[in-house]
Amino acid sequence: MSIAQNIDKVLSEIEDARQKSPHAAEKVQLLAVTKTQPPEIIAEAVAYGLTELGENRVQEILEKYPIFEKNLHWHLIGHLQTNKVKYIIDKVKMIHSLDSLRLAAEIEKRAAAIERVMPVLVQVNIADEDSKFGLEKEEVPDFLRALAAYPHIAVEGLMTIGPFVSDSEEIRWVFKEMRELKESMSNLALPHVEMRELSMGMSNDYRVAVEEGATMVRVGTTIFGARRKI
Image (cartoon, rainbow, N blue to C red; front, top):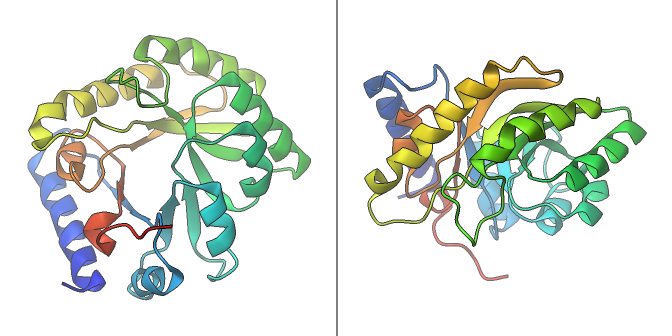
């Protein structure tokens, strides 16, 4: 199948999942994850109409950002080190992986320097996996309260990465707990915090994530095929 056909298939499955569930969001944004993909492959997806792109690594954003027209929106979806914030603060639409106050302080500093309010998602390790970054579920309320001290950070919602399993039904509980956490955090009425977005679901589990309330899904290999070696 071509990239265009893959995109159509993903969009159709997102809509099917959205229609079948009472918990689904009214609208779901597809992020095309371009990790390790060369510009000519990414260009096919862009030509077909995708404008929201997700990258795991700062270096890849820096390499690809100048190549494409500025009407594309890049999302940093991977772990972000504090010493890399300065390189992408003016280039990304959203940071999906805020997981520490140290990182928040650096984002605040760099965003203030260019007079920008940086949209972010707070990463939650809802399944408590040792291999994953993110806050524990219980840490989220106090973390959000602490972010009130950073006026150049706008929390738009939450993000998680589900455990990799062969049957996505096995981790439906992960996405359900994230939806419930998002709803409960909405009730805190904190400054600079709007629980609009729930970024969860990737190539192997985005259908279940949509059924449980994802507003953004991050899909790479299902659109582009296997990752390239870098």
